[in-house]
Image 1 (cartoon, protein in one colour):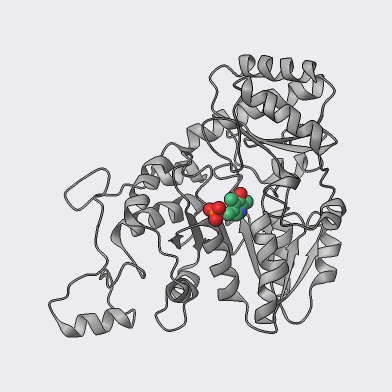
Image 2 (tube, rainbow, N blue to C red):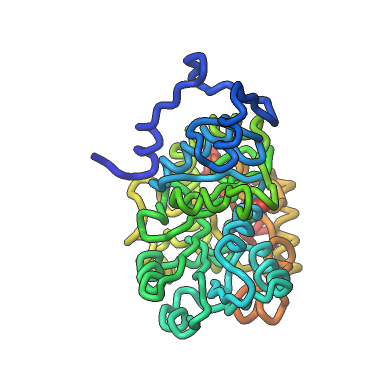
Length: 396
Ligand SMILES: *Cc1c(COP(=O)(O)O)cnc(C)c1O
């Protein structure tokens, strides 16, 4: 039997309260009890199946969380009001004052800012390393290290983390490997590859409609229970609860994710090859000469391609700006941040989603000021989209 995320989610049948195929939205903040003792037991986490208050658990959120846990192959999952909430709650649940984190130097700008600036106030120390260099990762670990943090495909340089190798390092040191899999749902199953905690910005591919911000944490039941503990759970106490109305719409979108990922990947590979043929400097892990190609191939689930993100280097920020403006006028897509949308989105990473990263560190990580990241859309006629891009390039 197949064991990939798309099969696991399709094997899951969720029956709504009235036999509804799309479980009804539980539009309630609080829940009633007939016996006072049951309420007390629920507070202590001892009453299976009872709901208390929607910052803790809501039935609609639980349907979505169960579907995500099935997809990732984890015992449990938790949904949050944003990807950053999933990331920050996971980190703060694992790390306390005096602890240390080893983190990939190339990460999402918000995550970088949180670890570079914000956790200082909790006396948590962070070492940023080239995550593709396993010796550097090993050397960075100290007695007080609690976590290795990385992204399967890092933002914005699309480097690939070797999750099985990083998991082995984490296990040897009895610490947690936390992986942000936002760029590669379906394509990589980080938990299957050894990650202890998998986080998502569902704002991107999982929801795929750019109509909301949301996040998820997939992990062991023990970890999810600790996050939601009424006395000491970070998710419970910081309170980034997802609205059940949104949960319901994300759950419906989740069920087309496997089809969308195939199309995003097919279109991205097509454009990557065209850029290459035309002598444009291109980063795409689907190209055999890409540094992360072999590592990604080793851990990916077959049939979903290499993902929907590509990056080209226009060398200067001015050239990047000119190309993006021309492409928007030509109808290639939108000059906008974010990704995983049905239309193509493009932005200059150094001046947008990675602008939190100081310029000297941008240079250290090899981020060119002319880098244009594309989230390639679901275009039915990608050849035609390429023709539009080519016309813009020729006019430059
Ligand atoms: C967008 C993004 C986030 C943050 O998610 P939000 O939903 O915007 O809070 C985190 N990680 C990655 C890789 C992202 O692309």
